[in-house]
Length: 230
Image 1 (cartoon, helix red, strand yellow):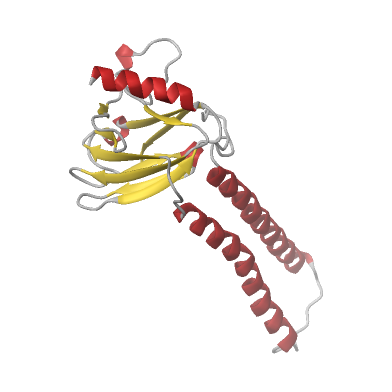
Image 2 (cartoon, helix red, strand yellow):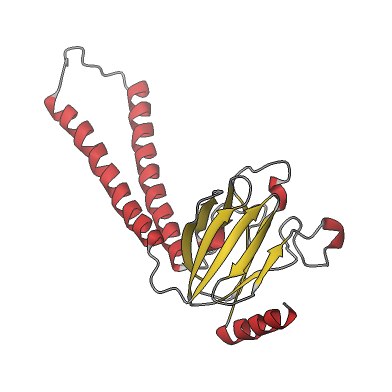
């Protein structure tokens, strides 16, 4: 869960998010080294009194400032492409959930069950209980088994939405008339919060996403109770 003074990302709750955190640190270190080098060159040029008015061109310098940026871009691009393909992999999902965006709530349908589905609305501030988070809690959570591949089919009923849960490293556009898919594996139990990440109207800020990862036996008990209440 993010907090007001947080400087970095949330703790990773999925293997993909762990890879994204490593890539962020990798790219940030490269940017830091480049910034340090450029700052040093600027300070050296401003502070030095030595100049050479007769250097019109330099083949060596041109080679360096052409090859070096190319190498740096390759060092950034290769791990980025690896993560991109990793995020698109969906191998033998144990559970498929259809998430539909509406103005302004989410509806979930567990397609492996005949009649397991519900709407998920934000809990108004005046109805919150102590310990609940303002603008993030919902009346129904999307419950999933931990350490299991979960496929999420994402679409929208009316306008563009985006289903995003930062701790799981998931963000997928919900487009009316189009069915997009993403996948994740919750590597630890917990409650993970997200929000619609596409401006979708006046109440865009009031359609949160809550994913609860639980052990498999707890998920089976929850699904049984939900089916009995349906």
